[in-house]
Length: 377
Ligand code: GDD
Image (cartoon, rainbow, N blue to C red; front, side, top):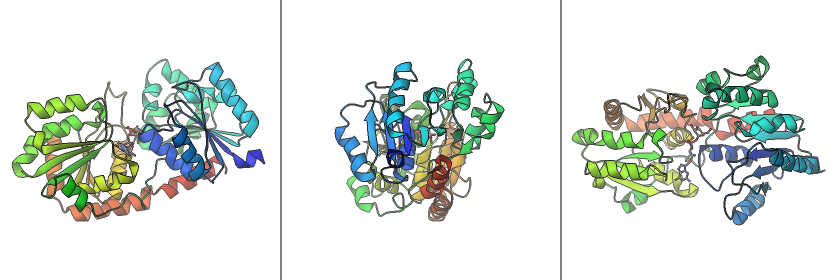
């Protein structure tokens, strides 16, 4: 009976409440597995009592918190996970992020072992001696998943022949019933943006996401679009840098920060935008890249034209010319030209094409079905 109830054990640092792309991805997978079939073994993130109880109430997901703030593949954590496996006898073990947790895979006895890769495994695959650990990770599980062709090409480099050929694409999908065009005119009014041409950008405020380049590109855009306005949704350590850039250029009245918004409100905030922009750029000599960029797909699903940076796998999340544009995330002129182009394009037609593309190619159910098949549920 036990093995039937909790068929899948997730071991992950990225289960929230903290928000981010990996968390969004893991949540999307977990929510679509059968009720009462998932246990999550994860790290501490403050008082999560109510948060964990909600997962149990809504999805029958049992959350077990390790005592550490960050799970690492140490002997203590291996023993702790082994105890869970002994009691629950899951059929599948899923590492929410392959590096480094899936190094534990070799020491855990479960019929099927899967490790999910994102953007950060790209640098593991490139830098010695981490590339050797990446090879070990590949050999410690039955399947490594990948987001798209770019990350696959990089991550597969150090893998053994077997691990390479066992890679399977599992990308994060979009709940196209939640992310859809909605009337956001009241929110626009509340934000004081009723008369503006809003360029919305959703994401953690960190250097890779290129919010600074949007600020730098804005004066050029304002020349031909004096009502243009940047709307930043999200929080992060880069806020101070952005504030300084804005103050240096006296752009305060052209930029709004909302801070973090609740998931339930996110669609409306995206729909305040006329276009979406996040010119992500690779950093550290190509070691830090965008794995995919769920926000681009969320924006397309909401019917907005999208401007994306050419970092890592981000181009996989845009159909150039159809759903948006891909620009060099380090070239301010190219970014301002791209923004102007999107503001002047037939936004409705491009937005509709984006919505259609998101529903056809990226709906969660497509990827969830593939994942369910993979874990053998
Ligand atoms: N509710 C809420 N509020 N959600 C937010 C906020 C906010 O203020 N800011 C960001 N998010 C959500 C976005 O809606 C999206 O679902 C997620 O956080 C961000 O995902 P990504 O755009 O994919 O970026 P990431 O850098 O955090 O994620 C990494 O892993 C992803 C999955 O593998 C990157 O490597 C991505 O490229 C990759 O897609």
